[in-house]
Each structure stands twice: as C-alpha cells, then as structure tokens.
Image (cartoon, rainbow, N blue to C red; front, side, top):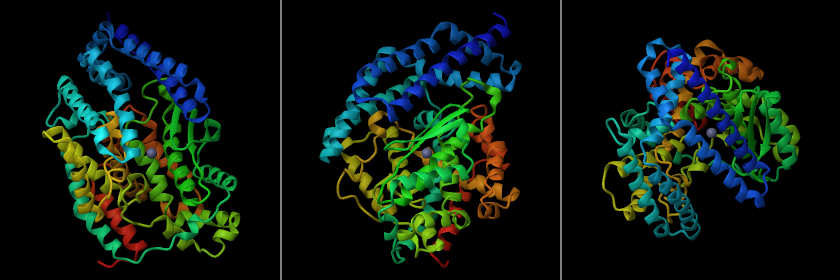
Length: 501
Ligand code: ZN
C-alpha cells in the first residue's frame, strides 16, 4: 500500500470512529436530559453495542499496520494527518495491549465496584467498598504493566487524561501549591467569617433561568450553534462545533450556584464552538485534554466571572430582577460573597483557593497507591491526616472523607490532577492575555468578544491537533509555569480579604 492509500485509510477510520463518538455523545446527552427511565435497559444494550463496534473498528491488524506505517513515515505527513495518527495510536496502545478477556472482566468489576461504592457511601462504611477498591487498584497496576510506562507507573494514567503530564511535573506543581497556598488558607481562616446569608434567600428559579440565559449570551455563547438544558450535574456535550450543548441547574435557595455553573459550562462550550472548521467530522474537532478544557471553563467562571469589573457590568440586572433579596446589597458585597474562602471537607463544594488542596490530597494518595504496597484499610486514616495537615479540618466520617468521590470506584485514577491544572493554566493564559488586552476595561464594558477572540486564536482553534504543552507554549511563549497560579491566588485573595504581608 502506498503512503497515499494509508492516509486514505486513516481518514476513513477517523470518519467512522468520529461518527461513533458523535452517536455516543448524543446518547449521553439524551440519557442525562430527556430519556425515560423505562428505556434504560435497551438503551444500555445499544450503547454496549456501539462500544463493541468502536473496539472492532479500531483494534485490528489492518489498522495497526496503517498506524505503524504512518508513524514510521511521519516526516512525510502534514501536521493534521500526523496529529490524527498520534491520537489513534495512543488509543490503540491503551486498548490493544490489554487481553480482551481481562478487559471484559475489568468492565464488570467496575460495575460492581461502583455499586459497592454507592452502598458504602450511603451507609458510611468504607469496608463495603474496600475489597473492590483493592481489586480495581490491582487491575490498574496490572494494566500499566501491559501498557508499559516511563519513569513512574502513575505516568501512564496521568497521560490518559492530560497527554504528556508526568509525576515530575505534578510534583513541581503541588510542591509550589503546598508552599504558597497552605499558608494563604491559614491566614484567611483567621479572618472573620463573611456574611453570605443573602445568597441563600428564596430566588425564583424561572427568573434564574432568564438571568443565566442573559449571562451566557453576554459572554458570547452562540445559541445558533448549541443549546442549554437542565440536569442535576451540569455538563457540556459537543457533537460538532456547530452543535455544542450544555446543562445547568437552578436551586431556589442558592443564587450563586446557577450563575457560576452556567458561566463554567459556557466556558467549556465556547472552547468547542471555536475549534477550526477545517477539521470536519474528526477526532481533532474536540478539546485536547481535561486540563485545557477546565482552563477554559475556569477562566470564565473564576478569573472573569468572580471579578469586580465583570459584576460592575452585570450586577444591576440581577439586582433589578431580585429587588427584595438584593436591593440593599451593593456590588462589592455581592462580589465578595462569590469569593468566600472557607476550608471544607467536600471537594465539589470547595472555593477557588482551597479546591487545589483537595486535589493535592488525592494526587498524593494516587501516587502512593500506584508505587507502594498499601493496606487498603489504612487509606481512610491517611486521607483524614492529609485534610488536617493541608486544610486544618478533619473528616469525622468516611462519607465526608474518602468515600465522597465516584472516580476511584470507576477506575478513574489519574483524572484528579487535571482539575487543578486547569485553574493553573487559566492563570497563565490570563497573565498573557493582559499583555495584549485591557481585560478589566473590556469586562467593565461587557465587551467580551475580544476576550473570546484571544482564546479562540491561541487555544480553541487547534482542537486536538496540538498537545497541551504545545498549546501553552503557543499561547504564552513559555512552558507551563505554576507560579502564575499561586501569584494570582495570593494577589486576588489578599485584596478580597484585605490581608497584609
Ligand atoms: Zn468543568
């Protein structure tokens, strides 16, 4: 087969696999929004079939030969083709090296482990989950053995969620956090509590929906290329750049939750809507990694959407809608309520400053679990010790401790660090954006298009055609530097809390 024929084969594979991805995404959207409960079983069978189809489409000798041939001749490929080869080869290697029967056994273990976790959490009893967690960890270690690793076994899993990420880089990142953010949290904890009670008054949810619609419009979500729905846990689903859907949620007694969730998901959606249209239906038409994706949701949610200039523009409208609740609350008080820092035990309820410390606990535990022989029953105590050390509070039960996250029960080890990296990337992007744009003035004027254009040109447009490290280098002219994040947090929160050095 000639080079050209191999390239055609790759493109045909790309179209077929991306069509399956598209269908799976559509199913995912439907399941989370409108699909009926009674249809669950048949829907499950269809989804199972699609994933089987996905496996046989990718994992076969012909495809392996084409991917190897193209990789051996990579200097003859254009950038786009090379990017596709790399991505499919990654997926191929992650799947093909694991014996099929062992993978099937693992899938069924995950279903059981997930059920056990749910029961354990409900009954607040780690011992129900422990034997399954132990098996999940043993299996993951075995799979890493099949797949191979460079340096540290954890690297293989980190790379699944954030291509190129290593333990060395994470260590640097978290060491810096520990040194600079643990003391900041301690200083803030010594300040008097902020009175946020007005944010949990009764806020009509229909009006909340009108307001969050207005906000996602204001930050440039293209409604003709997507839609917004409701779900318990907000998420974004991209089918193509012209069809990006996200959900949000409304709680009557929490006005901030709907606002911040909507801005967060809009950030994810803007990323997908602004990927270059040159890629068509392709693996490249998707955000490149968890970390870069979170950087886009968080730069809108936290860096812009919790800033005073942003609320100087948009608070008036909210105040008008809720005169009884907000009539006597000025914009500074409102903005401060959005930036309250308080160490807490539950990750998903954490504020911007303590959030990365929750991730640090999980990172240190995952790294240890994968490199040392551990007694599974020691994990809850270890978890609690770390919370006490970094956040100054200790869980009184495993429900508030090690049992709070679903991730490990589903075999998602290596996923957590990308959440914290997202915030850190966002800080670096913002720093460089400010060299080109008067960001505060644009926020103050409600002129969000130049901000979106900057992100689109430097990040979004590439889709998955560049690796995360290459995107950071392109957008900022330097490699990932964790100092931007700790500087950003220190400056912002010293101001919010009026701290002195
Ligand atoms: Zn997100």
